[in-house]
Image (cartoon, rainbow, N blue to C red; front, top):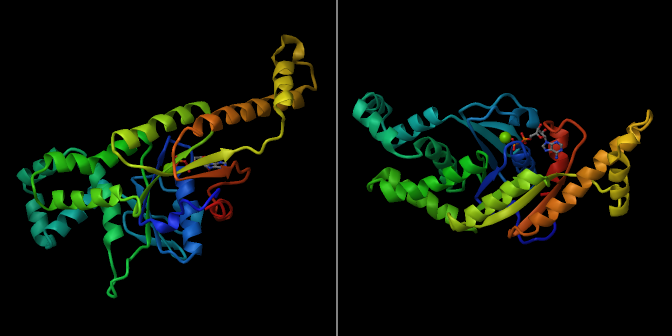
Length: 310
Ligand SMILES: Nc1ncnc2c1ncn2[C@@H]1O[C@H](COP(=O)(O)OP(=O)(O)O)[C@@H](O)[C@H]1O
Ligand SMILES: [Mg+2]
């Protein structure tokens, strides 16, 4: 952490997005682990994922019901159909009534007609868990972390409450969307966390994504997490020399493997420097840099190591 402007501890809801494969789930696990170590009760909500959170915490598998995965950490793998059923029965209070009503084709087609309803079932459920309190009135979870879908889909998901406010007539669905949107717009309660790696395409996607979050949704990005950064081994001169040495056609002598490996590394370091400079243009409260790990990342030890950065 480079400053104290932003800490995950101070938010009720963290929406974690970014390009596919950059490390969103890994970052969720690391943040949850950091928060839990500081005595926060954390829920990690996944969206219909091939879940690997259980591997990261060394727990048993995580399904559509909330289960503990470690001290102070719970997880759920939200399934839209299941979440909708839960939501429907919550709205109608009585499950028996719900099942007869839900079999009604008219009601089914009404639900289908709501744009983004599947996304809402996941986002809305995650948001709902930020509102739950125990008998003493204390929050059930201090922080809810949504391991959100990748870039474009993540944006679509965040847009849904606004869309509901525009097209759905007054009622419970609209009222919840209104309350959720209020929570998301409040930077003291919600942070969007964008995860990326310092490479060409992920950086371009990150620049577009953060612009869209700001301009289209009018929301701030709380933190930018730059994952998988390499320790710098070569100076700019050494990088250039290595790249030159391996780019000439007669450089492939036997025994040159070390040179080729060095040149590959030099290219990655140069690309990283270029893209870190591009990422400097992203306005966020905080920027967190995580190292490339050379061990099994989906493991409690790796998660613990990365947690230290939060
Ligand atoms: N800091 C890191 N160092 C090395 N490998 C990483 C790191 N972070 C993530 N990975 C690997 O990258 C892959 C994608 O990570 P994951 O967290 O599943 O990304 P996402 O949720 O964005 O798809 C996984 O195989 C993971 O182990
Ligand atoms: Mg993931």
